[in-house]
Length: 75
Image (cartoon, rainbow, N blue to C red; front, side):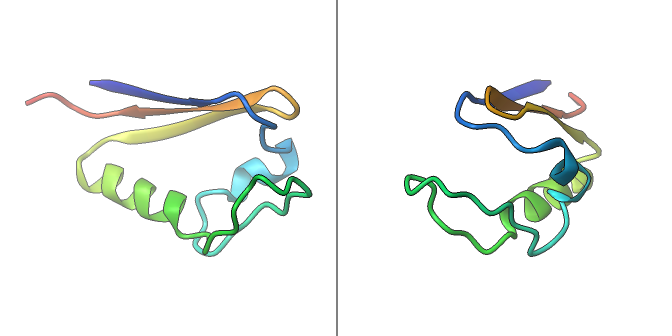
């Protein structure tokens, strides 16, 4: 099973991509519409996907958007 989650907002700068699944990692934004968070959401998502023997990947173009792909085995 493949789950895609796409955000066509601002995207994530390439320099931040290696760290976005780390606990408490946050990308600062000057956009007032972006709410602050704890930096745990993607870390917890990655752990949950891992527990289900799946994978999660991210592709992002800064200024264009971000796409997360979760792949889970179907049993």
